[in-house]
Length: 133
Image (cartoon, rainbow, N blue to C red; front, top):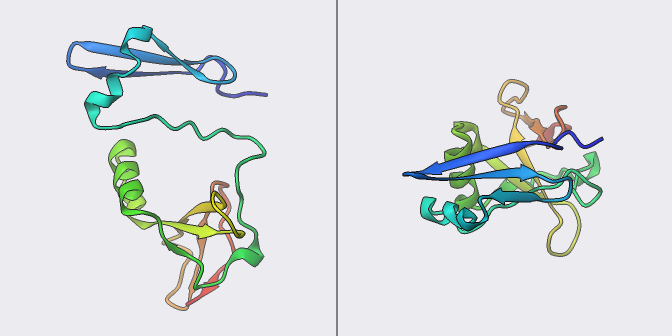
């Protein structure tokens, strides 16, 4: 079941607009001539993070205190601005296996964490195991 089927996202910059409609495999811009409109907002590209088997989900054994790092500042800043949420200041990343493209993103669970143990939320809604600090 694809929950995005028929989904639409519209962007308006000045007097121009573009609407992206999910086609089942990709987001299609309408009108096509405005497909570069987001460049005027300072974003060079649009990234679609597909909900498929290529997504990386951290496992409890991936959590070692020295592995959890701050996500790149540019990503934290963009996520905070685009999603209008301060929590992305605390976006973390963990490399779950060797190689490029094996990162999973995490956000600290402010309520469940203690000074001695930190809990993180991954893309799933349940908190991941506490990491001793």
